[in-house]
Length: 185
Image 1 (cartoon, rainbow, N blue to C red):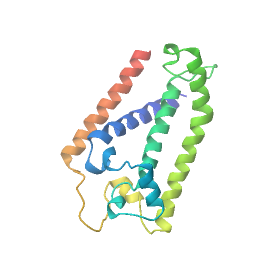
Image 2 (cartoon, rainbow, N blue to C red):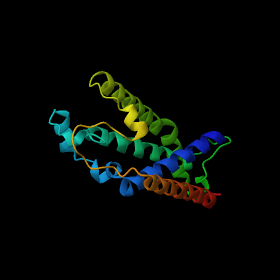
Image 3 (cartoon, rainbow, N blue to C red):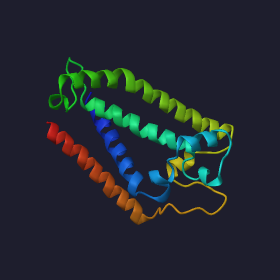
Image 4 (spheres, helix red, strand yellow):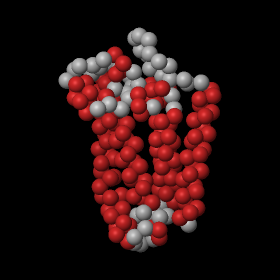
């Protein structure tokens, strides 16, 4: 269970980093540059696609990003307040009402876990679909942050300075999680 907790704290740190980076990161990482309205999503799904929608995250991918940020965040938050009533409890159990603990435990072990697994399967399925149906390799851009494009599009500002700045933000997010855990102890 110790590794379960450690990995949960690591996930929470990474999610916090991505949420912060969504406001201050590179051009294509910012939420304002890829989050779209439901109408734009429906238009995209009907085939009305614009070249700039293939840079970074397409409209469907933007909803995937939201889901893959918010659902793990909910899972981590619920885990912080969960109690198995045997030997293990989250660090915030003593700080919240018992009804919250019961609800958080149920959500963490029964509901959010399933939603997260479905989202991951859909995400992996979409990667395969793009690879084999549209002949687009999305794994390489996901891992390296670079995508081959036709046309001129704004740069993402991927410099050594930007990467160092990202490391500082990541360290601050880790510090925030560690501070939360110290407060809860």
